[in-house]
Amino acid sequence: MNQIPKSAPAKIELNDLHKSFGPKTVLNGVTLDVARGESVVIIGGSGTGKSVMLKCILGLMRPDRGSIRIDGEETVGMGQRDRERVLRKFGMLFQGAALFDSLPVWENVAFGLIQGQKMKRNEAKERAIEKMAQVGLSADVAALFPSELSGGMQKRVGLARAIATEPEIIFFDEPTTGLDPIMADVINDLIVKCVKDLGATAISITHDMASARKIADRVAMLYKGELIWVGPVSQIDNSGNAYVDQFIHGRAEGPIRMEIRR
Image 1 (tube, helix red, strand yellow):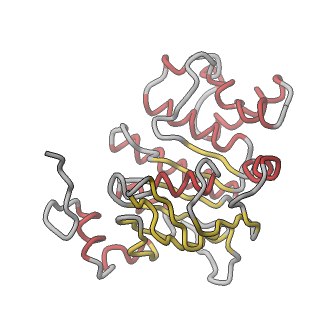
Image 2 (cartoon, one colour):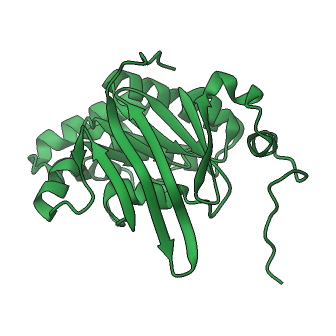
């Protein structure tokens, strides 16, 4: 984990974000600053607004109101050309890796280089193999297809793709879902290493508290569309917040009640 100076300028600034779908409020006044080079993990149950928050930052959804600044630049309502310019700062590891089945591994890793940066294919392949090596994949894996890989290897390919363009900001969406505890820990270690090597700013969504503890500088908990606790990961066991305490220990009893449709 990085030691982020308190005076570090914000890379991402969210201010009073609101988003509803019909009568359902998903984000209800979310305010959060993420410093340059900081790793923030968003925790919370399903349907609490975590993915919607990321989609708003990426411009895939527009908040009903509120501000999203990247490097001090307002992005809500930004035009297509400027949006594409800002998006070049981002890398993303999708839940389930989300690889293209019809492309060999190296083309999956190089996809953003070829399609987004218009890099020549031979140069992109070299970069892809270099990034694969950084996540522990040998060059002979490059010609394989995703269906030939284990779940853990697919996650590594997804991580290599996320860092291939050497982004300033990386989003990790449930990076350890579906992995056994040992492979999950391997992926967590790789995330920490890759983010540190790039000096990138990271926001992660996870239900996996072992993952959160390893990759986070700070943890923020979303509950019913609101950030109910934000603090250093070192303080999460002493948050003084009953909702956080219930969630991190996975207790059925507590203030969080699962809604069951009848």
